Image (spheres, helix red, strand yellow):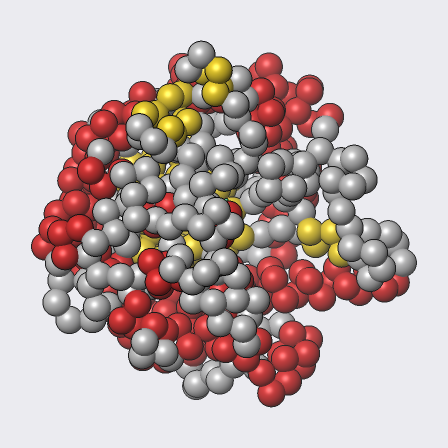
Length: 454
Ligand code: FCB
């Protein structure tokens, strides 16, 4: 981790004044209020009810109760001194059945959120789909059904009509790979389906709906920056054996290029289509061109790398390598490598790291959390972004996952990713040491246009 050690003390000097610093959350993970004010059920509300689906048997009914604590949470966000807040809209809160009638109370909530951010000088970055599809649409086939693509475009237009004039950025989907593969192939996330063919079709419909939504929003005069957010773990071979190299390449094609190739080059990787055989998605004429609709930015969520091993599975923890509480290897240089590689392969729009952060044990003592491990994680990864910037990658922003501890999907509340500690019994929020560090770092970043002076 040499990157960090050399760079940390002067880290703020390495970013331009207009670099966008933020924090991120998603609706299901923080809002709670699962049945309040006319909200419909989502596939995550449903999935949490399945025995064994969530590690600690919890659900999102209350979560961080953000829905009822909006004003004080907005103050909390502002207290960090961030430029931007990335959040998502819970589709069934604003359109309970995923089609037809809108729910005024739900729309009002997001309007108060957006206006509250603007009043505090914070850019709103809105994600339309961070996984909580209306359950009513799941019952009509969910993302496997082509009709859902059109429902999503209508939903995007409705949100834009109400809020678009005040948004800095709109993200269509968060991490289509996770929705497709974890949700529809492995079945460990909602909606809990286990079919490779369904997963492939879902990924195609997610991408298609992304492209069609971009076109519709632009036709409607939307001025917000439009893009998608992909999770990316660069695949690296465990050894330089031919088998490991081949496996790493296949992972790269399946997990990363399956998304970037259609978005940038209007084609799926041929080797993955061949591997899927009869499970390959049905693609209609014109779909690929729609998917490749130019984006204003690309969001990247980076947590770790993927080490491909044809032999024994690579286990960073067992090897004594640094890992987070998710057992994800801490590997900041992978972020620089990933960004450089994308830069070499494509003509990129501005890139934002839309999520980066770590879960750690975070013991609370005397009302404080001394999370030096999270601070190190953030510093080294921010330094990795600076390294990419130095080498010409068009980096435009970085957002920490997450503002506060929250519902970590199938892991429930056991894994804490927040800069802010949440006591779920009392809903008290407390800034961890990492939050204090991030705030001071941002103050230094904002103090002057460092890069221009160098
Ligand atoms: C990402 C998700 C986000 C959060 C982090 C830890 O895959 O987008 O909601 O759960 O992982």
